[in-house]
Length: 431
Image (cartoon, rainbow, N blue to C red; front, side, top):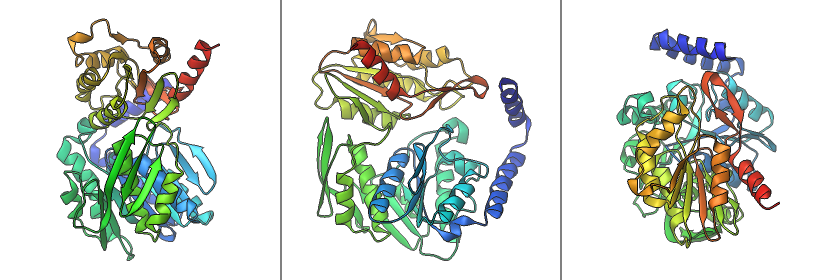
């Protein structure tokens, strides 16, 4: 396995980009031909942006499903066709090769009316979205991400934009875009052609859409109003309310009444690995996927509000040469919001994991001397946090969320689950 991984890496590094691009395009095309272009027989909703994609996919799917529709969905959390659910263990949000075409084929075979897909910049750059007939596209937000991979923020934005540019070129069906009008890049995504454009946001805009009217946040949930409707749910944070607005705007474009959507949101109590409360007492343990400065800040800010005790942070950063610039920024954010910081391994890939967490450590304030720990073993880091916690404290574990593996060098994957580790050590402490 390790030898195969080295060979694949060497081939990628020494093959011209246009050949690699054609290779990915041909794989997708051949898959579409083999499965007879299944997206033409189902309504496809694509969700893209920097953060919130998985949550919006799952919320949209749940609302559609709860209103009597048969739905397939693909996200970094899970693959679901009707009632058949498989955890996403690929460490790949938007699967490559023939996987998505096969997924859509099976969705059609199982008589699904909708397929809701999470669409990533990496997937777009490798043509995984090609030959999928999207009917609706949702833009959640945009902030710097995968900068090394795409060669700058403008290129990253352009890759996302190419998905919207292709919408009007698809088969002749009603095409809709759902846009976060609060985001700085909203005008860019509104500039692409569509038959209908619907907005959403915390502020009311002129474009028809779903807009926040009131909001109350608490450490155990939130309540909010939009377009005359009220919702009270267990999901935490302002950013999750924005995700909820995105989901409502999306399903409203497909005939779901706002009152119905609000009622269904009321019943949603958990989003796996997204601000998930694993322990509620005597202290709080939150597990979240946050992997960008903006999302990390949102998580920390949400937990900090109303917290009477200390905030203990467990974090690291992804390897594989991905967005090295973020590492000291993560450290700076941790020192701004945390009281105790534990740096640990995340997904090192082919990088030295110690070097990665040292780069995160470089951004931590010197005032944290004696209040920050570098513990490479992620299990031991979580155990340390639980042992340090006192009643009223909050432990925030970020970077992995509901992911099921840790990726190491040579494509080696170690089975993993932050939430299971927390439960295991907590039961051990209390035994």
